[in-house]
Image (cartoon, rainbow, N blue to C red; front, side):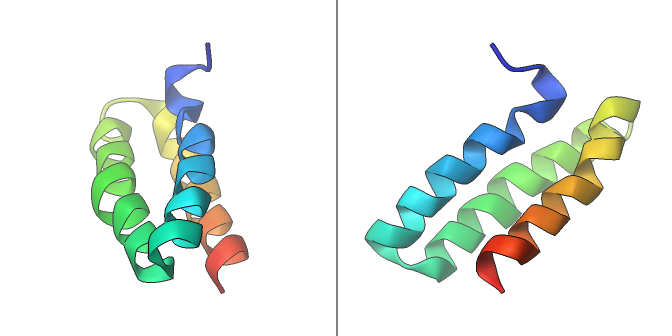
Length: 65
């Protein structure tokens, strides 16, 4: 099982599937409103999550730009 602070990496696979099936805006909504906000909330108290938040943003940019 993935380390909790790196679970977002698996969520990108889900987002790609959402994008293929329902379009890019829906995939971005899934990542930004559901997953990224959760990661940011956890980052308040968890340094591993804080470090991963920048990687999360970079991955969004690399996939959806």
